[in-house]
Each structure stands twice: as C-alpha cells, then as structure tokens.
Length: 320
Image (cartoon, rainbow, N blue to C red; front, side, top):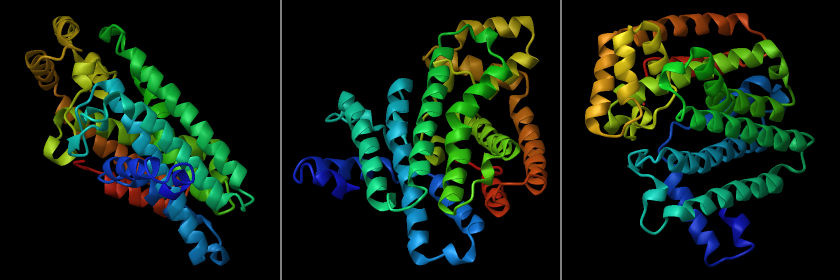
C-alpha cells in the first residue's frame, strides 16, 4: 500500500503512510482478515484454493484491517479517547493531532488504489468495490446514530435503539461484510440470503455487547483501551439493561451522573450497575447467547459454518 502513494510522492507521503500504518494497524484482534480468509477457504471450490487466490484473500483481509485502522482514528477523535491498543491514540501524538483526519482520508484512498491494482482483473472486482462502499456508508450511519445518542436523555435509551446502533456500527462491519467479501472472492454469495445475513448480524450484536461489558469492567492493561462509554454518555447494553432493572430513585441518580467525565460520577454509575446486578446479568446473557448462536450456526444455511464456529469459540468469555 505504501507503493501506491509513492507513485505521487516517494519522499514524504510514502514514509508518512508507512508510519501511520505501523502505528495504527498492529495490535488488534485481526478478526476481519481471519474471517475473510476462513470464509473464502470454506466456501471456494477446491480448484480455486490456489496459492494465488489465497494470497488475494489475505490481501483483501488486510485491506479490511487497514480500513479498521482508519476507522478507529476517526472514532477515537469523536469519542475524545486517549488510548487505543495499549498506546496513545493517533490524534493524541503531539505532531499529529487534527492532522489525523487527513491520515484517515489517505489510508482509505490508498486502500482503494491497492485493491484496484490487485483485483481489477477479477470478474468480482466491481462487487468487491460496491460491498466496501456500502459498508462504509452503513458504518458511518451507525457512527452518526451512536454520536447523536450521546446528546439524548439517558432515560429514553431503549434496547431497540442500542440494537440498531450495534447492527449498523459493528455487526455489518465486523462480521457480515468480511464474510460476504470472502464468499464474493470464492464466487459464491449465499450470504445474500436474508436469514444468513440476519444471523451474521446476531453474531456481531453479541460481539458488541461483549465490547460494552469490557469497556466498563475490562482491565485496560489487557484491553489496551481506557474506558469512555460512561463518560461519553453512550447508549450501551449495560445502561439499557440497567434501565430495565432500576427503580425510580436509581434512574434519577443515573440521569444526574451519566455522561459526566469526573471520576466520582463514573464511580457512582458503576455502583448503580453493581446494585442491579449487571455483572451477573451479563454472564447469564453471554452463556445463553453463546449456546443459542452455536445452535443457530448448524441451523442456518448460506454461512460458512466452520468459520462461525471458530469465531464464537474464540470470542466466548474473551478478555480483549
């Protein structure tokens, strides 16, 4: 990808892009590249499982990881986050700051040039591009819904609202689109089936709820990120589940302190969560959802079952 931008500037831009990528891409779970490769290997006929095609699947997977890196640059700016993957967010570096927005544009644009260079000879090239464009539109809508919720009265949050944000912002991007890309490359698109799509969304929804729990209760030394959901006033599974369990007095306390950035306010919210047993509620949810999704994998056509099985087993009771 560095070579793509060096066509325009071999001295400045190429070296800068290399620095941006080296800082922001490593350290993640790499689920997207794993999903694309696994979906391709499981879906493609044997004659397509050549070294050349496997390399293309890896290329496509890493393009999604690069897109994730550009996405979190912007997401961290919006959330005013300070750390990501165990180090300061890109926009927090003294010599970067607001220039991080330009880096997001450069990374995303370079990714499309890289894809054209390596995939435009394939019949599925146009479909790959359309899928990526659709993905960024849906993800951007999800980011917008997530952002405007922070200006909403916390007592009006609903599970339906949280679910919509999660599907648009996370599930489509993290599970559905990588699976679809792997199948497109394999020459099959059974994932277009509505039932298959909705099931992959359910896996993504499960992963988002885990992320919400880890934001509040995870160890920053393990997750690599300092929690901000409470401070930012996010519509999360925790706060929506709290609203379903809380009495009037507890809801009044929530409204007073939720979305405030001081440590005392955050501590008050976490105590409220403890008072209504959110840790236990989450553990019950995780166990029940895991068993249900594992069963659903066997009952749903049009999905790469081994890939989904592996993703669920890896994600169950995860710490990061």
